Image (cartoon, rainbow over all chains, first blue to last red; front, side):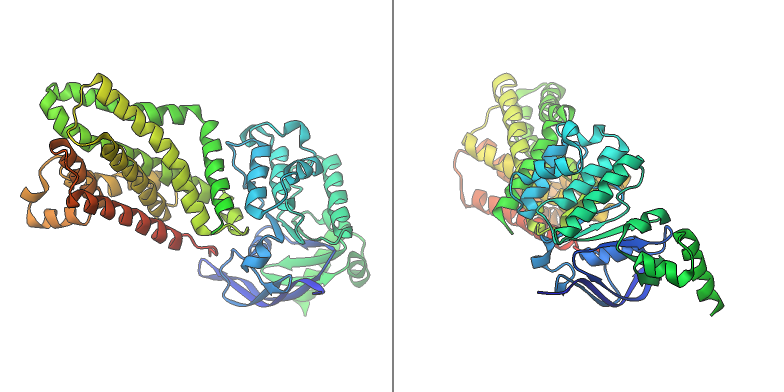
Length: 239
Length: 244
């Protein structure tokens, strides 16, 4: 049994001639909800792409479920949802999930299970292109949950959702984590951080902090995570 | 490669087309209408009998090229390609899935063009009908394979549409439709020799004049098949799992 879902060591990534990740090192224990937080453009998406194995990396290693990221044998055990919905707009929600389910090798009933999980049952037979932005985002999220993956990587899954739905999704993330799934969830909204069991704060391609919300509050002397983030940045800049 | 995933992909692409009635109607009807148009442009049965079969291979080739390059480009820009790359799907599963799905569409297209040409436009072909159908279908597949390959060079829909003239027009001009291949300038004739569509047109023109399928026919079919497989393989190479 591997204790870590993800181990990243000295990861460097260049995009468009610039280094965007400057040697990241961290580990993600299994069965946790881990928040990847930081302002837009800080490298969250690039890091997530490296974890799911679709990012060309400059140097360093990314190990996922005990194997190199993107290795064939881990691809069916990792679920990934990009920030902009990656589903076929000219297929219905159910057709989309049936297809991705077949590709992953998930049981046939899985499509309906995940539709239920994200609360899209009433829209299951609507074309994805006819859904509202929030519904489309949930369809996108549902694909990542197919086949009960051991690691789920979600890029800003709660953007544009109403507070009730956001609450429901966070409850779902925690339930999945209790069942043993590791959830890596990115957000640029600091108040989502409080819902995570562990936080990785990023800025300009570097990790500012990697701890629990409680540790972060204790260290910075504030319960307000937005404020904690600011204090961390000022601290770094004065050092 | 996994046959289950390949078939699921082909089915998904057909499902997408099923929801898009207009594209389906255009795909099936437009080439047939073009044949009708041509018949009356020439207004001479003998010329039509000579040119018609050549167009039977150029039309499916062109239409499939355009449809495939745009469809795969949408897959790239829509993020679904990246998503598929994080799954166990193999690159050939995707490419062969596309080839299978579009062959189904191509069959319908070829059936309608042939039906209209033979029943209403009085097209007469000396060679066997199945050989005609075979070449037309292989040609459509060649269009699919080249379209998949070409879409690797396009980043936007604008570019994808421009690739059609770049890949298809030279082949159409040099394939023997406008001038016999052996009477061309040596440079053009050599170019024509390396373009797969030329062999399809050669095979078609042989069928119009002779009822015998000789070694030349088999060789033409082999060249088209190899060119199709080669473009599919090169297409797989141009489809990286990791992108910058």
